[in-house]
Length: 516
Image (cartoon, rainbow, N blue to C red; front, side, top):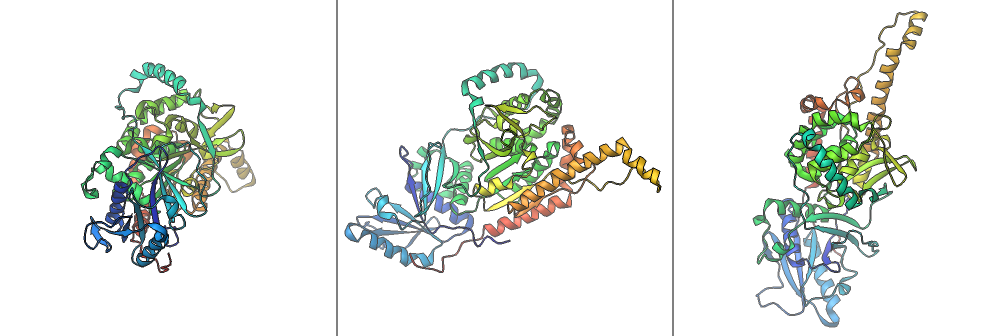
């Protein structure tokens, strides 16, 4: 596989949206340090000023915390010509140049026509930004409040009565039934967006920003920032699989252990379950999900009448969190039976997204809102790799945890005309045929969808007996995880993912075309 053709913008500017006062100079410094530290890209921060600095040799590149900095004095009628000359001078030596206009430096209008990527720091995610024909735009959605703290995985049944009452009050208050969804995008979403959780006051207080001295949580956030700007984001598509979703748990942990980051997640059915717990609470959340195996098994009965019990469980474990407040975006996929399309759920709570995405038709209750009927996302997109690809992932990793069925042989078939007739009439054989066919249909459709989306890595387990029937055995969580860890296909997929990430992480070189 090759990532040579991915977009890598060469002249980059960070800019505040209206009503945002992020310390852009500190953000630029820490962002470039993160890129240099993690990927060794040769970078230059070009400070644009109107008054010459007092330091000697300010017009020659000087390395600060692993990144080169240079000061360019630009003002008056020759402002644009001076900047263009400086860009032309340095473009052949650096993979990217980050412009840093000081407070007394050029205005944004003076730089139009020079920048290739505008990184716009925004707070209001509901604002609509039209793509610019002159440059690409990456919207940084600031998340300054921490999501709800994880709940202890205690006795669900002991606390459910009180929690259900509290949850219903929250539903009325939040207007959860007035959420939103979007049709599956038909192409890359423009402008691109990503989320980052930062303490801007703390960042602004750094006298000498140093990425190496940041706390781990802030390093993780700047790591996501770096991957977004350099087009190195990793998208993970988790397929519908019911109890087989516990195989996703080991796959996520395996990726993290091998140093493969996860920047966004799409999921259908059980894949949404795993994605929700990880996106909301990281590896701690995955542990909570595993501990809920018996609870989920018990909830299968009330889920036949209403999938609200699934929503309540997620909200109880993770807190009532909106999907738009997750730093690692989660895109639950559900099937909209009203218009016959696949919908990506947005603007709802995490619990509601999980509920709609896993409403297996005929087995569990449908999820109905605003006269729209939602059923399991696996019906239309069992491995929704297209979603993360369209959201800007450069590396798409897909996990189709539902195994293919083992080949089925006739239960009993004497080599006679009557024997073959009896075999065809055998009701047990017909049931076995139906279960095997359903398993094959969901597994193969998931593989097809992942490959059609261009997924570079696809995990599909070794075939098993009657996997669809066993998809409802949540109490077999430990067995599923144990068999996953020893599956040769599991190891192979992790090896491929690690190799792909290593390739994507390679340093970018300076462009061969030096024209500004």
